[in-house]
Image (cartoon, rainbow, N blue to C red; front, side):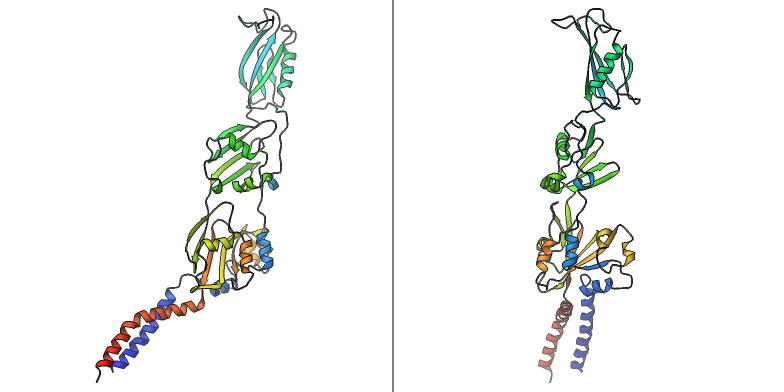
Length: 387
């Protein structure tokens, strides 16, 4: 009876070990993901990283400054506009002129000068000049304003001369903000200033270059690129247009690795980007005794315009602006490492390596062995003393 009881106990422990191994699963198997993708209405698109699909995703170009905003350069001559500040100096010959004040005579001549306090161009585009009245200056150059003032003063004073200086050009400026040393409204020069120029005028960036991104907002449109892209490609260092808002911000990039990898963690990388090959290296590679080499998956949201080019994508998944996509790489294919080198990781990607099917059986036997070892030892002792 003792041996029969031991057999029954061992059978119960085996069933328990099987249940425990099933509950101890650390993520879906590769077969589960593939099956879910072939349901009647899957919640994501499954894309095999074969040659054609890899070409599509690897060659997919994100919008760039140079493509979206083009190469803008302002006019060489700046014009005065509403909100700008101007300084006016007026000269007249002889004594007793309209602008004569004690001590205003210039050395070596009979001309007298007078400085009119700085004025901000009003909403109606005008400024006030004593004895000349309100003069419309918006849309005119300083030289054109000088001529206008002289015309208005002609006949009122002897030989009037004027000099107009644009002291604060608000209308021809851009705003720089974010992770810069000193956010400011930066006046643009007639020769034109590029993105890095205005950032330098704001004191430069405070965040590390490899974690910094730059957003340019213009005419209701905003576009963000990593600073690394501007430094590596001079075409991205576009000219800034008046009214632009340039924002610098720090955004550390990362992906999540879990499953049968050597390191399950959130892993950071530079804004310059890394490939899938490098991501697997950072994650400690695939575990030889646990990983399913056919089950390397990358999960992310892709633009609908890209996903639409993949074959056999359900139409209802293409109704939004982005589509959840699961890319699968078969590491048993000899060309898979070359494909992994071409596939670029993105911020917040998920790298998941499924467990090999045989591993679940091994789990059951490990649990079974740990639970039955004391019982087997007891059975041996029992048999040793049995008559």
